[in-house]
Image (tube, rainbow, N blue to C red; front, top):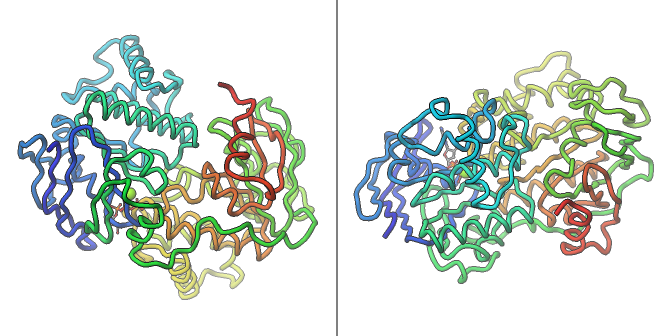
Length: 499
Ligand SMILES: Nc1ncnc2c1ncn2[C@@H]1O[C@H](COP(=O)(O)OP(=O)(O)OP(=O)(O)O)[C@@H](O)[C@H]1O
Ligand SMILES: [Mg+2]
């Protein structure tokens, strides 16, 4: 047995999170670890990655009992990690970041020649078939490229055990397929044992041999992946039957024909201009491959990157936009990267919610009254199912999916006229995803105009009234929802793309 974790326990100040977990992994096995948001998946894997000096229980690797009290010790025993929230150094280049993780004995990149390091990093990326701009500072990359950098770094560490915590949460379908090939190759030809965490339950049967389901800090079940259907897994991880279908049918028609958000001739950095009008109550999906310019378009709309052209909201021009001015006018964006641009991790759930989005709503009373604020925050926590339901909890201590819910809740709560959601359900479990979809539909039903960027084509199909197809920085066409399915959508976004 490659890995044998026995009776693993871990508590934080707020209480126990892992209640004696047993987990086993064989050489060459791809083992899925699934569970609801906050079940304890990341905590179990962080334990294996040497992040806690105070865990209980025993860990054996290849029969040898090991103590993993630091990431360095874990790496020395052959454990490589891809963390759910990135651990890259933003100001270093892609090549440096890949190189950083390579030598567990801690050689600094400055000690070897830069060109040698760059060459090795490029070779390692190539070995797993991933292409990246090696000299670009990681800060300038999109989220997907950051994810790919993490993957190359982990793959290059010559690991016996590779932990991937939601590596596909921010990857488009084509990139996912490619990652699966890389995983199979590492498992089959190098005998690496892979632990794979994902909320995309369809992926489990496709790429994993074995699946383990966690709920509330305990293992519920382990078995051959082929023995479980997607609904089986969904039931097991939520713990009850009533799951809101995450793929509900497209909702009622938008309430008015009059456009609420008008984008006219919006051109970013020499790309062709974009024209798009979204009605009150309408949800327009934006589908495209990674690098097709979806996030950049969204940021140009709210004034976060420079662009020519004009934006009108409810008939009024929004000149000289900044994200703050746009938000004040009623146009908000929920960014895809919750860690960098979304949330203040050291602040509480309440402070994060009150910081921006709630302020305009509460200032109607002149001042933000503590009682009103508290009631509103608590209703949001309940409505969005944020766990634990404690408004004073620092956002940085929430599980990944729960932090994501805080981000979306904050925007929805402000009742904006128009809302841009960039990958709103990345990392959210099946149960919560359906709930989030209902809340987005509710915002639309209340008259908001919504732009929805998502790599999850089923999500686009479930929510959108129309779908804008982006290829190479421009909106190629805008299609009505009727008559679209997964395959036709995938064909549309892949067409005319490079490669
Ligand atoms: N540093 C911390 N301090 C306090 N509590 C924490 C800390 N890290 C995690 N927790 C708590 O431990 C529980 C399990 O979190 P964990 O991140 O392991 O969940 P998860 O299964 O990975 O969920 P997700 O699917 O949302 O990523 C949660 O209730 C979380 O709030
Ligand atoms: Mg997690």
